[in-house]
Image (cartoon, rainbow, N blue to C red; front, side, top):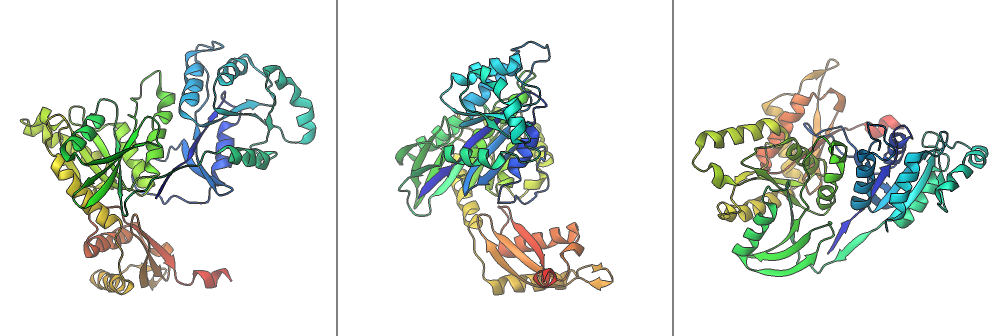
Length: 448
């Protein structure tokens, strides 16, 4: 079985050089659309992109400048260094109209010292004539090759993307994993006790088959058996705290988590009982649902509040308020220090995985739909009663269903939520995300 991760490509450059325009241009080229999920943040600075059948993760770093006006202020250096450390490929975007600046010289010096692949992209070049006139000045940076483009008008865009695709790292670790190995990734901020939790799990089970060099940076993936089943435990680097001086770097702190999400079935997000749920935690939880992964919320350090019933209730209440869009996710309490609660983790992983990979017959699904419609009649839309003709399962991991209707536009969110809840109840899918798509039965005929 192959575990695949994708290259991380970072856009770096000063404000107003056109990074956001280039980001939007590149991300529109991706083939797979992400289904919107209630409660998931939309202020997105990352996106998964596919070009020439090769996938990568694109991140926009924001403008690298320092408020003090220094040529090489702290933010410039921090942004550039973060890109060098975290990304596989760097797109350094310069302004073809403004020309070379002192900041460009300083960042170029940093980038030339790295062994990472760097594309020096000269943006706002709209034509061959402008390329001839404006490009030569950039050779004073001491760079042999530039990529003139117009992010707005697409000039040179295809050439850049084809060259980028040739450099993409497709990292396939051909592991001879046992059949149906459950891949579980652990996420958490520094000091939440993630590594201690994994060590506690391994120490209790003592049946490690092998250690696998992790495709996610700074991680070691461990293959173990527990009972009759095999699990690949994916350890991820801690998600850094957001601080005043590193707020712009927050987007880099989650890239490792995104890479791990690419290859896991179930995400276990650790929450610190001492601190409670944080904004960083909610963002990671949101990303797990954008990727359609199974989810378990694990409150660690429960030993610190074991005698404080009021604090326990407060923690659980805060979690429920912060992430209502994952109310289906099992919520467990544990202590990596004492081992409390660890034994409940694997049965929970098993039940989530079973639902996550479930298949259902079309006849059973149609009976369920028929009963749901009879119990609660669909509303009227444009003087006609909405009709639901049939349903079928169209995907797994997580379970995905399509329902054919006479008018998908007329299905109110509340009735769609009603159907989702009926499917959850009728199919026993109470612990996993469930995706329900309503389509028009005559959609193809209307297009003709």
